[in-house]
Length: 275
Figure (tube, rainbow, N blue to C red):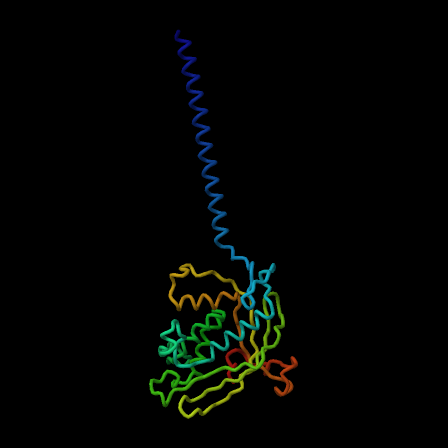
């Protein structure tokens, strides 16, 4: 009888031991699966979104290479960005029918200048500057602030000035590296007094270096402010300008139907693009 009880106890102990080992192994397996899943989720969160669709004139264009961009999309990006950057009206873009008849005044955005002071740029210039690379944007805005007349923000109608960038031509992009292009632009910067109509026309021929960029959608979606939506729409082109240089036309700008242009001066950089 005693032997039978001892045998049953050993059998029960063996079963409990096997059960404990199996349970422990199962916990280890579950922990390993959790770790593996966590690593997969982290890897997915760090992966940049693929460029499945590219829009040209509102029409989708298939794109397999994430660094590839259609030439016309690059040209439209350049035109849209530079016009927004250098067209100053002294008023904000209308957001509704009422603002079309009575536009709100543009109070401007204060920008620190290299001299240590601060000057204003138009709101449209500030928003368009998000189409620039982050390392280039700050210095570029300082230069734009120095170019922007204070009369743009004047409340006196007799003193107010406007500025408009009139683009004559944007040359076909030339690829200089995977995902990087060089684009020439021929334009005039026209500054005009609202009263009297006196105009100052300045040639604005630039050589722009553009590259493909990542884009992450607005996390707030339709709940974001108009300003936030505008900034995210600027980045939606998946392109950014990372340098601007002066552009020299080899034919003296007498013929806009050829591609004869070069960079002005070997020593000039983006800091001297307005000269």
